[in-house]
Image (cartoon, rainbow over the protein chains, first blue to last red):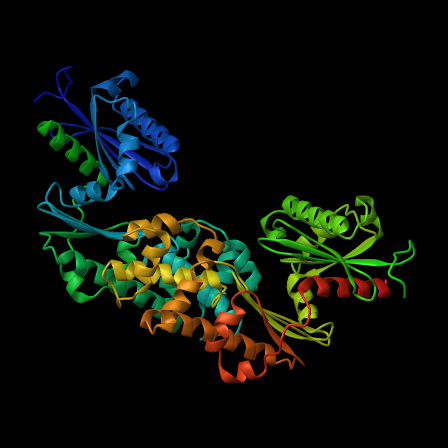
Length: 298
Length: 298
C-alpha cells in the first residue's frame, strides 16, 4: 500500500499511436499514473520505422517523467493501440519488432479507445476527428465500420467537412449551384481573394489541412448558410447512421471520441444522443488495461 | 514548293505538355508534319525540372523522326501549351528557362487545345479525361472554368467518377445507402473480395488510378445500376452546365476533348450536344499555330 516502487511490482505502459501524436502513460497495477510522454506520429500505415521511433521516444519520456531509468523499460508490460493492425501482415510486422519492454500486447487503436471510454467494459465508440470510424466489441463480436481514409471515406469527419467546403466554395465561385458564405470564409481563412488562392492552399494537402476547415463549416451552418447546413446535415446523418449500425450488436455503452465529437453533437439524431455516454478513460488507459488482461492470461 | 528543307525555311515545333505525356510535333510553315516525339509528363505544377526534361526529350525525338540533327533545335520556333501558366509566377519560371529553341512562345495547354480544336479560329473547349475543365476565348475575353484538381474539383472527370465509385462501393459494403453492382465490379477489377481490398488499392493513389475506374461506372450505368446512374448523371449534368457557361461569351465553335468526351456524350443534354463540333487539329498543332502567330507579331 506504500507509495514507493519495489522491484517486484509490475508496471504497465499504455501507448496510443496516432496519425499526429503518440501518447504513453505508465501505470501501477491499480492504475495509478506514474508518468506520461508524448512523441510524434505512430501510424504503422504511414511507416513502421517512424512508428517504432515514436513509441520508444514516448516511452523514454514517460519513464523520465516517472523518475525511472531508461533501462526500466524492461520492467514495463506494454499495451499498444495502433491503426491498421487488424490487417494480419501489419500485425505481424509489429509483433516481430525487437521491442524494449518486458512483454508487448498489440491491438487496434479503436479497441484501446473503446476499452478506455468504457473503463474496461464492452461497448461501442465512434471516433470523429480528422477521420471518422466506428467500432464495437461485444462478447466475441468485433465490428469495424467506415474509416476508409481521406478522400475515399471518413464521411462526417473534419477532413470530409473541409473537402466539401472547398468543393462547394469553388463551385460557387465558378457560378455553379447555390451561393454560399463558405467562399468568403475560405478567402478570409487563407487570406486570398479568388478561387485560385483557395486551390493553391488546398491542392495536394493532407487530411489534417482539410480538417482545420471544419470549424468554418460549423460556423456557417450555425448562421444558416444553406450549403454549409447541407454539408453538416449529410455528415452528421452519416454519423448517426453509423451509430445505429453499431447499436445493432447491442453494445452496453456508447461514446463519441475525438475533436469533432462535441461540435457534431447538436446535429446528431435524438435517438443517438440519448444513448451517448461520456468517455471514462483515455485510450492509453485502455491500452494498459488490455496489456494487464492479456498478461494475466499469458 | 519543293520537299527539301533549306536553311532559310522557318520550322515550328508545337509542344503539348500534360500530366502523363509530353507530345511534340515539328511543322513546316504551311503545317506539313516533319516529325513527332513523345516523352514523359510535363506538368509544371508537378515539377519544373521534369517538365523541362520532357520538353527536351520530346523535341529530340521529333528532330530525329524528322531526320534533323539534335543541334537543329536552334532552328525551331517553339510553341508550348502547359498547365498552370496562367499563374504569373509559373509563367515567369518557364519564360526564364534557357530553352534550346530559336524562340519560345508560351501559353496554357487549354489555349493550345482550343486553337487546335478549331484550327486557329476562336471558340470553346471542354477537356474531360483524368481531370475536367472548360475554356473559351472570344475576342479579348478568356474564360477558365473548373479544373481545380483532384479531389477538390474536376467534377465529371474520370478521376471524379472513379472516386465516387470507390466511395459508393465502400458505403454499400458497410451497409449504408443503396446496394450497387459497383461493389462487385470493383472486387473484380482489383481481384479482391472485401472493402479492405478496395481501400488498399485506392488509398493515397493518384488521380490517374481513380480515372481508370471510370469505365466501370459507365458499364454499371448502362446496366441501369441506380447508384452508377446517379454518379454519371451528376457528372454529365455538371459538364453540360460547364458548356452552357462557356456559351455565355458566344464562342463561334465548341468541341469536347479527352478520353471521357466520347463515353460522356450520350449523357450530355441535347442543347449541348447540338452545339458540339469535332476536333479539327490536335493541341500540338494549336501550339505551333500560336508560335507562328506570336512570332509574326514579334
